[in-house]
Each structure stands twice: as structure tokens, then as C-alpha cells.
Image 1 (spheres, rainbow, N blue to C red):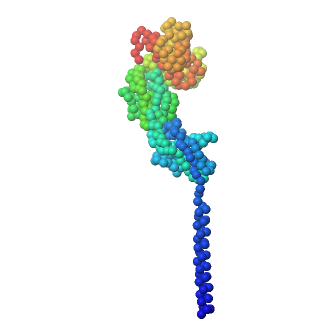
Image 2 (image 1 turned 135 degrees about the vertical axis):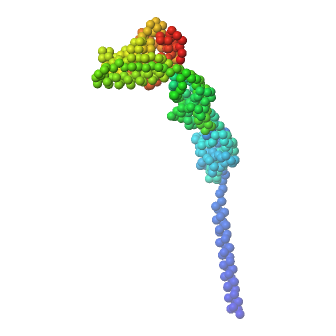
Image 3 (image 1 turned 45 degrees about the vertical axis):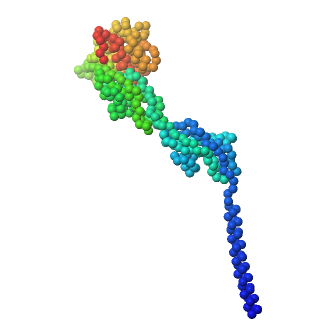
Length: 413
């Protein structure tokens, strides 16, 4: 019996030892968990008020009052269209920072006319801290504004306008141009001419296919995210269509040299007549001659034009210049006795027009035969096709001032 009791006693002690060992393992696990807890304090900061508010952005930032228990490793602003934005929302870093804890950040990619909630943030080892929440409403998109110069490039079937888009209303201009009609307040549903480039700045557009002696209404337009904006209305009236024609005296049996000269003269005369008939209301039949003895080219008020053998003068610049002579410039007593006095053209209509063309308050100059600028006396006076247009506009203005063929009657455009 004693031996058996002893065996029971040993077994009981063994079981008790096992139970005691399990309890010791559980206590070690609890101590390990407690050691992983995070300690420290986050930063303290405020959010700055907005500046430079646009339709798509603004500038804000913050001031770190206290960095907390450790150095700040990241800072900036965050925003959302819902209150209490976090760094999981939209966020931006700093643009600049100074030693006093003030930093500047920029919000971008916003939508116009929209309310946003914004907070500054700062991050250290203890976590993310946020500043006070402020509200931002982005600017609304407005209409574009324009500069529309009075129109002076006006012919019988064509006209041109000088326009400038001054502001875009807070959103990029995607299309710009001019609309026109024979009734007031034209829109993009009326006739329109679109410029090749969008955006701000100056541009010139030509209107074609107009009806002679007709009043038109024109407005500049620009399109941005808000829609279509229009300038104030400009009114202009086209002139009567010109009727300048020509014939060429040709040899009955022309040489190859003459055939080539006739071809060059024809091309030049066709172009000269187009400019005169679309930008003046003059009427004249002109006879063209190929005369080897002539040095360059010359003309009379009776409508007689001669070209020499030099092919460099058988072109548009020379032809339009000589056609001017047939219309009375430099070939009449009116020109030398009335129009030009001491080297200055005296007619008010021309000098008013010239100021619009050049932007300078200087009169037209002239001598017994020629006038300038835009008299097409030399090749150097032609920098673009607009110089031919200006030449014809001035001829039409001279008609109003009393160019000989019309001085005995009333000018009728």
C-alpha cells in the first residue's frame, strides 16, 4: 500500500508541474504585446487663408505651431468637396517654407464655381495632424472681353476686321472669330469666320462674298467653358463694285518673246482688276501695250498703259501702280494743283484713312507723279498682299476727295 500511494503522489506532482509551466508561457506573451504600443504626440498647426483664387486653383498653406514629439517629415494641404478632408483625399506638398514654420502650398486642378473644404496637414512619427478647416469657392468662369477696331478695310464684296481677345474670362478660349449678317445682333448661327488659332491676342479676319452697297452688322466672338461671348456690334457698308477692265493690243503675228510678255501682262492685269473692282468703285477701260522702246512702264489718264521688254515690270505691283495713273494720280492738273501741296496730300478722306492703316497721325506724301506710302512705286513697298489692298482703299478715298473723273459730280460709292 505504501508503495502504491507513493506512485500516486509522484504522478500528481508531475501534473501540477505541467500546469504551472503553461501559465508561465501566457505571461510572456502579454508582456511582448505591451511593448509594441506607439507613444508620442502629433504636431499642432493652423491652415492659412486663401490667396490668388482662380477658376482652377488657389494658394494656401499653414503654420506649424508645435512640431510634436518628433520632427515633421511631410506637410502640405489636403482638400475635398466634403468636410474634413484627409491626406487620402486630394493633397499637395509645399511650394516654399521658412524657419518659423510657415509654409505655402498650391491647390490645382479645381473646378470653377465649386466649394471645397481645405485643411493643412503635418506628419511626424506619432501620426498625421490637421489644421483648422476652411472653405474655398473657386471663381466663376466669365465671358471673354474684346477689342474690336472700327472697320476701314471695306470693299464691294470683301471686308476685313481687326480684333483682339483681351481676356478669356477665367477659362481657355477654344475658338474665336467674327460673325456677321445684314441684320443686327449676329450670332454663331449666322455667317461666321473662324480664326485658325484659339486663345488671346490680336488677329485679322476677312469676310468674303458680300453684297455691294449693303449694310452689315458684325461682332467678334469667343468660346470658352461658359459658352459663347460676343463683342459690341460694329456696322459697316460695302461700296459699289468697281468696273475696271482692260484690253491688250497684240501683234497679228506675235513672236515668242511677245507671246510670253502678253501672258505675264495678262496675269498681272487680271489681278490688278480684281483688287480695283473689289476694293474700289472705279470704272475704267484700260488699253495695254507691249512697246520694246519703253524703259519700264508708263501710263496716261486716258487709260493708255505701256510695258517695255523688261519682264520684271510685267507684274502686279507695276500694273496696279500704272492703273492708278490712268485713274488720275500723277497725270492730271487736279493732282499737281489741288491734291499735292508742298509735298503733302491735302484731302481729308485719304489722310483719315491713312491714320487708321498706319496708326500714325501723318499725312500722305506726294510729288508731281507719285505718292507714298502704299503707292507701289518700288518692289520694296510690297511686304504682303495687304499692301495692294491699302493701295486700292486709298484710291477709293481719293475718289471721295475729288479724283478728276468724278470731281465734276457727286461721289456715289
